[in-house]
Image (cartoon, rainbow over all chains, first blue to last red):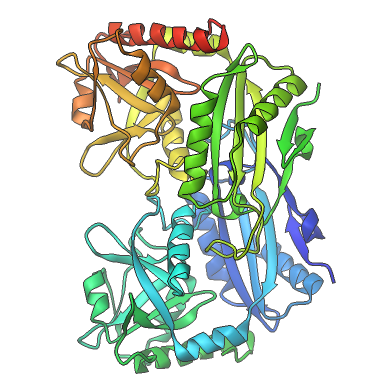
Length: 291
Length: 291
């Protein structure tokens, strides 16, 4: 069966899905995106993802009305046409096509919208969720608005490649004061050496993660509470537990940081509890037991 | 006559020039570019541009052999097919097409190469070169490697848009210490209040401008010399003269900074001398008197 992708209202064989070379997404990374998971054909946290998409578009003054019905239909069509029930949809909206000039084009231009779907390798993910992953720390190298989910991702690409070269799953950024921001494609959490669950607040220096938000909700009753505040790379190095959250990481234990074991080198008890709480959250929305 | 553009060896009507939606240039701004001017059909500083292109590719570990003959042929074809003798060619090379994953794709992938040409509005440029332009200062907001000429340009886009909204030609960046880096698409020079010509050295925090390099060469004998060193936004505010250099700015006088006149509000004598020296430099290479 051919892979079907989406460009500006059209469902096309993937290899025919293209954009003009003067699309501002290609020439300026003048574009935003979302990745939404679905299980049993049902999207997880569709509304928060669409709300964030709206904020990202507003952050770049891209005029595009985010309508829930449009994206529900897109999702249903992509799932049906690609016959995938558990996977992710990638949606990107660019400012559109215009003769190259840095500043926004004068007059109205039509944003470009593209989408692809692909299955998630849940077996590999479950394996990582059970055993934990290795992570490294790297110096912050991104542009000034990581809170906007844009495709200006070259810093993230280089950080992820640095991680991959060391056999690590994720690179965690620290700024020039030694303070952790977030992972190159995830939010970072720790249980510190006093047993307190800590994650950075959404202060403009991190992406407001949708999974982060869900875990903030689902931790209630599961753990004693969380502190949303900045923390240092040094504090991370003495943490009892570390985990990452993102759409494709779920609640991912990090058991090795910069080559050293985190705690006893196994996923910790708080992480386990939060994994279970998040699993329940997914089941409530989609009916599926995912991991 | 239809506009002809270039994609991976093919010369196509511009509207048919496209890239696949999973090109890493579109999804990650994992791409580099150059803009080279030509006058009377002859490129200006082709070799330095190709050398910088090579460095940008190396900086991102994109495996692509930059061959002079290939680009000379591309330039000749694009000039002939579009019947433009004075203009610019835009060349972009992306890492290529691959299933979406931040880290570099495993195995070999073929970089994507695209190009467009367009005429320069020399009348408008001459007008600006004669009368000078307005500029503003903005806080540095770019990713960590502005020395790589990449398409991760969203910070530059927002800075340029901020300038455009104030009727200014360029936005000049200053870092969190108040030190000037460069313009959003140009290098910045000043004649300071002691009469010394100053521009930042190529220290990794600015793009090594090709026009900058030419002016460093052509100033010899034209002015008493230059100091290549960092300087502050405060120093810029007391400068006698300010000018910008870039492929499409040439030696562009800035006569108004953040709403206040620079010097007497007219292009200054050192700027004039350097304009003439650069004009001579262009004529020696291309045979054309450009401005």
